[in-house]
Length: 207
Image (cartoon, rainbow, N blue to C red; front, top):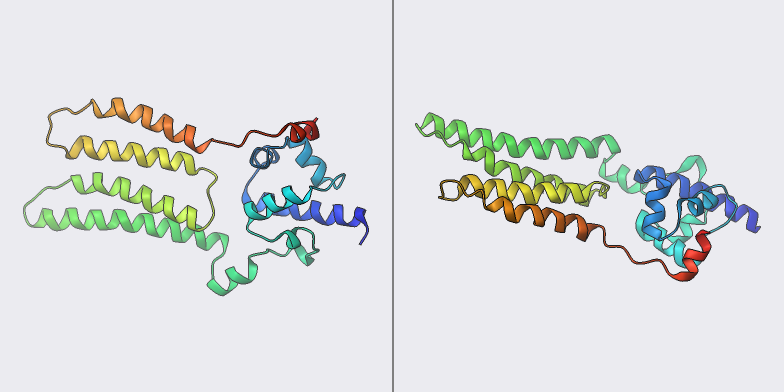
């Protein structure tokens, strides 16, 4: 196979896998420690990533290096067979996540109504449902590899824990909890944005 053909094959595969994952060229570049200009060059077929970068891409997209360098008729989805066997399409994944989260709130409502019928008003069941539903959502987006906004979901989960403690703890006004919540959320964002510093030779490639 000619190098020019290999460039075009890898370019088409990178474009398709990147768009399927919901990444912009800049976002993919961040994950690989390359500039968006370099990603654009690869996607135009003007250059081909080296073996190390191809390995990184394969891990990010959940495919093999061989898949990145092979032709696929009709833009075949690398996970199409597995998804077909499991009956999971993009639409189904969204429905599964929505049903799971709604199920948590339905359970909380059921507990509230049941206790209400017994003469108890326990609205705290909805406060408990908040972190549980966010945790459910977080687990499912990780399972289905939809982690684009994971850091925001984690931050929301941490905040919901402090909200839960605020209403559940037997204190009058434990507003001091939120003094801890603010640096905790900042810590989440900082932790989720730890990236390997680009090597000097990689910087040179991006120029």
